[in-house]
Amino acid sequence: MNEWNVVTVIIAIVGLIGTVAVPLSKNTSAMTALSEQLKNLSERVGAGEKDLEDFKAKASDRHGKIFAELDEHEKQLGEHEFRIQNLEKKE
Image 1 (cartoon, one colour):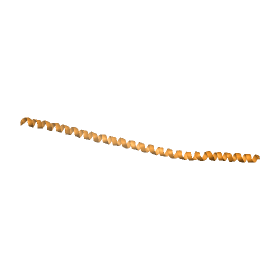
Image 2 (cartoon, rainbow, N blue to C red):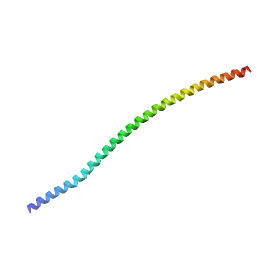
Image 3 (tube, rainbow, N blue to C red):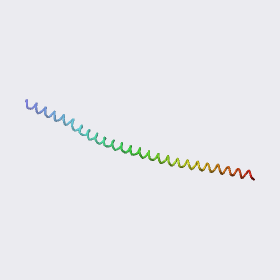
Image 4 (cartoon, rainbow, N blue to C red):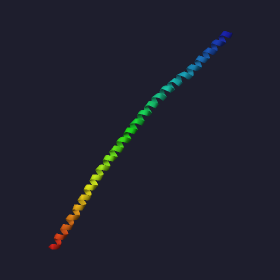
């Protein structure tokens, strides 16, 4: 009978290890996969932020050029308006 108690305890220990080890192993694999996915996502977000900053800088340059052109046109329009008024006064 004593031998059967030892066998029962061994079976119980192996069953307990199997019950804990298998889910723990699956959990570890899932955590590793999630960690890799988070790392990949973080890299993509970083690249997206860099692209956005580049886009903002280019857009700012373009807007600056557009506003400078508008200022030039406004200046020319004012000069033309002045000349037209002078011509109308002469008539």
